[in-house]
Amino acid sequence: MSEEIKQVQDEQQDQGHGQPRVFVYGTLKKGHGNHGLLENAEYLGDAEISGPIALIDLGWYPGVVRQPNGPDRTIRGEVYAVDTDTLYSLDILEGHPEFYERQKFATEFRNAWVYTLPPGYIEDDTDIIEEGVWNGSEG
Image 1 (cartoon, rainbow, N blue to C red):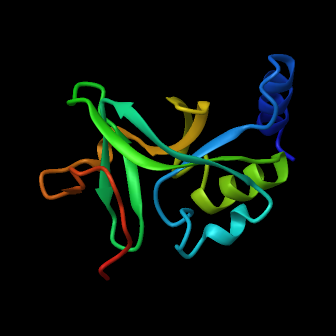
Image 2: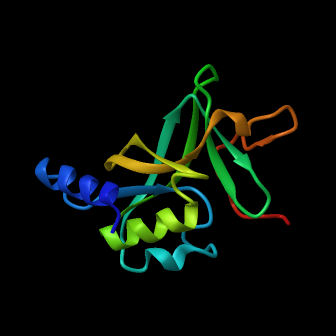
């Protein structure tokens, strides 16, 4: 278990928040290829995150990109309460912190970790999913 995950667990338990929460918006959602990684997680419900972010189509999977000077957008997904082993498995899948980075966003179920990409992933020809929902790859 990484020191960062242990620190997150200790911090949330100290604050009485129980297990870490994760907001998923792509292949980890119900009905998609990586959802099995959440088999030990508790589904809390559908949720939204908002802010200067964009949901982009990367082909076989999407990404949430931080846009510090961009417009506010809403992205819809699902929130799960996860144990530290599951969080560690998700970090491996998402390549955290070298590819995706975990950041906290407010949701209907308190703050949740969201795997995000840095602003450099948005280019002129990037496919932004304006409706804020990824339903799977066309590829």
